[in-house]
Length: 190
Image 1 (tube, helix red, strand yellow):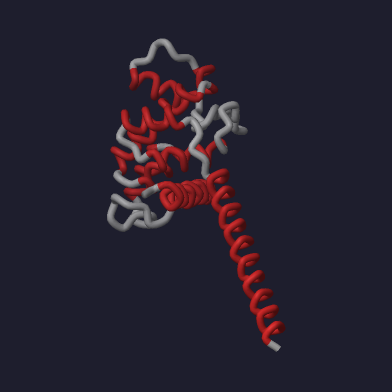
Image 2: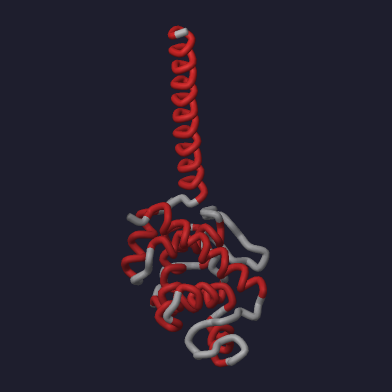
């Protein structure tokens, strides 16, 4: 009888060990999946230009992830290029603001140059509108659109924050950036 009791205890103990090992393995796989799904590629450039333009690095990573999925050769259907998907006219505007005579639009496939230009634009939008949500909306739809929405009581009750984004694709974009930003904070922030 004692032998049978020890045998059952051993089986239960062995099963608990198996469950613990499998559980730990599943947690490790889940963590690896999260890190691969929300990577921090181009860390040197993101850190440099986030600091230079007073941006939260995780916000920049969220925009890059949403815009290009970290593909430096990405080209959108409307011609936006690179990691942060810079359009030709946006490139010209940022180039003028940076007084950068050396850079041409072809360099939007260069990760450092693209991140520099994208961070400048995000910083400008953030300074102008005061929130990541409005900055992301302006990054997607343009400063003029967001300015108009903030002046319209249908979209902003207080004139400084967006209650509703009237363009569905921009609303979806802002939501994706916000979700990615929150995931980056959850995964990496101490």
